[in-house]
Image 1 (cartoon, protein in one colour):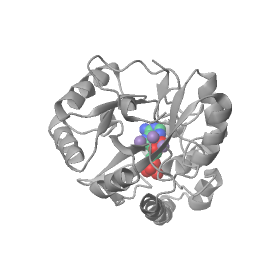
Image 2 (cartoon, helix red, strand yellow; image 1 turned 30 degrees about the horizontal axis):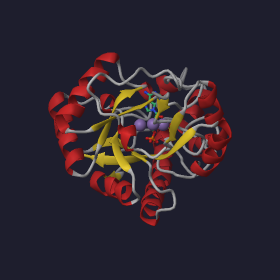
Image 3 (cartoon, helix red, strand yellow; image 1 turned 135 degrees about the horizontal axis):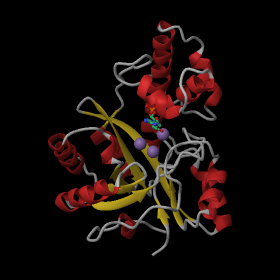
Length: 277
Ligand code: AMP
Ligand code: MN
Ligand code: MN
Ligand code: MN
C-alpha cells in the first residue's frame, strides 16, 4: 500500500510551508499520495499540483471547510473536489468574508485586555487570503503573551478567554453539498478533537451521514491510538469510509509530521478506494 496522507496545510491557510515546499517535504518523508486541505481555500492546489508532478507524488485536490453544527465548530474535509467548481468557490469565498469580520472582532476583544494592534499583527503572519486564529496566535507568541501557539489556545482565543469570539460558519449540510456537487467526498475531520461526549458524537455522526457525508478521519495526527480504534468502530457503525491524515501545519507546530501515520485499523474501508489517483 502506498504511503498516504490526506490532510495537510500550506501558507494558503495557516500552514508555514508554501504549497510547493509542503509537497517537497511530503516527498522527503516518503509520502506517495497526499491531499492539500487548506482551510476554506483552494488557492494552493495549482502550485501543489505542479510540484507534485515534479516529485512523482499523486496529489488529491482537497479543502477543509469550517462549519457550525449545534453551536459547535466542526471541520469537514472535501477530497477530490473540483477546484474550478463555481458553487464550491462561492461557498468558500463567503466563509473567508466571515473570517475577516471575525478577525476584526477578535482584535477588538484583545484590545479590551490591553493587547493592541493584533489585527495588523495577525495579518503580518497571513500569507494569502485566509486570516485564522493561528495567525493571531503567532502574533501573541511573538509579542510575549504566550510561550507557544499551544499555550495561546489555552489562554486566549477560546471560550471564556480574552480574544474569544463566537462565530457562525457554514451550515454543515450546505458545505457537504458544495463538496458533493463538485464531485468530492465529504470527510468528517478529526472527530476526537471536538471535546464532546459519546451521545453528542453519535448525534454528530448521524447528522453528518444524513447530510451526505461519506467518510471519517479514523487515523489523524490529533487522535490517540485509542481514538483510532474508537472511530474505526464509529465508521463501521455508520457505514462510513475511513481516512487518514496528519493535519500537518509545518515544522514549528506540535502536530504529527507527514509520512508517519500508522495504517488504518483492521476492518476499515479506506476512502482512497474511491479516489482517482
Ligand atoms: P480558525 O479556523 O481560524 O478558528 O483557527 C483554527 C486553527 O487553530 C486550527 O486549524 C488549528 O490549526 C489551530 N489550533 C486550534 N487549536 C489549537 C491548539 N490547541 N494548538 C495548536 N493549534 C490549534
Ligand atoms: Mn489549522
Ligand atoms: Mn481541523
Ligand atoms: Mn486541518
